[in-house]
Length: 167
Image (cartoon, rainbow, N blue to C red):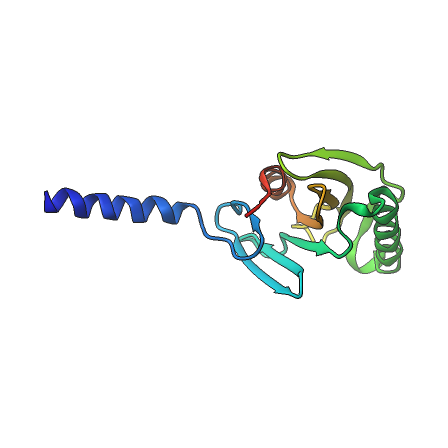
């Protein structure tokens, strides 16, 4: 009986460690091998999720003001600033397309919203094929997610965002 109890305890510890604990107000499972850090002060929170490969990241930041904001207007402002910045640095970082991205809908379990996708063609930054801006809300809080990386990383981050929920 003592042996079966210790095997059960070991098995429970192993299974609970498969779902890495994530600090902060959101519940999600990070992509395999990714590191997650959370920084929060006064109701503002930011997650940094980094893949095992350098250069592939997702920043997830709570936007003050809740869900009362116009997501399309805010997303347009963010993407216009990004396009302007990338044009100035095009010789260094590569070519960004499209200049006027189409805003698309994103549907997750608890959080839904809008996103835009850019493609970067660069010899220097070969691991960053895509940059995607998301604005997601659960009706109370709005979060901005910025994903940079290759197709595989983007797919993993899409899964994370689709399963995102509050603790």
